[in-house]
Amino acid sequence: MASIDIQNVKKAYGHVQVLHDIDLQIRDGEFVVLVGPSGCGKSTLLRMIAGLEGVTGGEMRIDGKRVNELHPKDRDIAMVFQSYALYPHMNVAGNMSYSLKLRKIAKEKIAAAVASAASKLGLDPLLDRRPKALSGGQRQRVAMGRAIVRQPKAFLFDEPLSNLDARLREQMRAEIKKMHGDLKATSIYVTHDQIEAMTLADRIVAMHGGVVQQVGAPLELYDRPANLFVAGFIGSPGMNFLEATYSGGSVTLKDGTVVALPVPLALADGAKVTVGIRPEHVVMGGEGTGMAASVDLVEPTGFGIILHLSLHGLAFKVFTLDRAALSAGPNVHVSFPAQHLHVFDEKGDRCAVASA
Image (cartoon, rainbow, N blue to C red; front, side, top):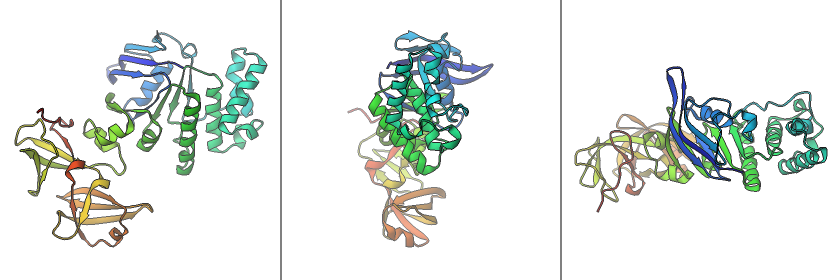
């Protein structure tokens, strides 16, 4: 396995800049997930690591070696695509062994590599089948097996579960997680699904507009998002945002409600801020407790209930496990525990705590 160092990397198509000064260090054996909305540059960055896209500026190193000018076949990495890209005329064993045959590996070594990968992925009974006789999940396992047998320095995954249904995605996430635990392989995984990112990653790289917004452990991005983009993208349902004014260690909302913060912030009194709170942290109270909001929609999810509210004229969500919310009237009252508030400045960045 190997580390991957990305230093001040840029990518442009003509005059259009799609990646801006990307700096990222991926440790040996780490599972890193690139996450963000469509068009944020995550797949472009992955293809640049693979050598399928050229680097406009900056430097990429794999295992300490500069790879900017190396062809994909010389980088010793394996890629698993969104489309399975299996050879339809070959059986499972043939698909998994093809790259090793091209490298003229001894037959007994190829057989051992295929058998080992098939055992890890539960493909032993399927080795004689062709892709048309496999389910979507089985095909994706074959694509992963084809990558495993090469024993590359790194695995690259480009939205490999996008074509699968929800239950199968859940199963395949578990298989990918288990595979990484077994192989301890350096892995970079691209997705727009923040649930995949949270469940799979050692570290998440949140991207937007061709810029890395935050890098950290999944719960670090959930608990302390660096800016409004990360706060709104990570978490389901997404974080609620309200305009407010900061003064004397508290925030004042538009209706005049004052919420004291646990610690003072490095802001001047009167500064305009955005207050965020996750739907699961909102507290619903009785009449006269908290702020009044009108109920627009109630969504039971089985495990919990999502209430869509109007608060200060804005869409606002609450997630609760209390099934009494199913019979909530047209109006409810909500309050915000201060310890769960996130405060962002006018630029959208997380506000720093005032120094003592």
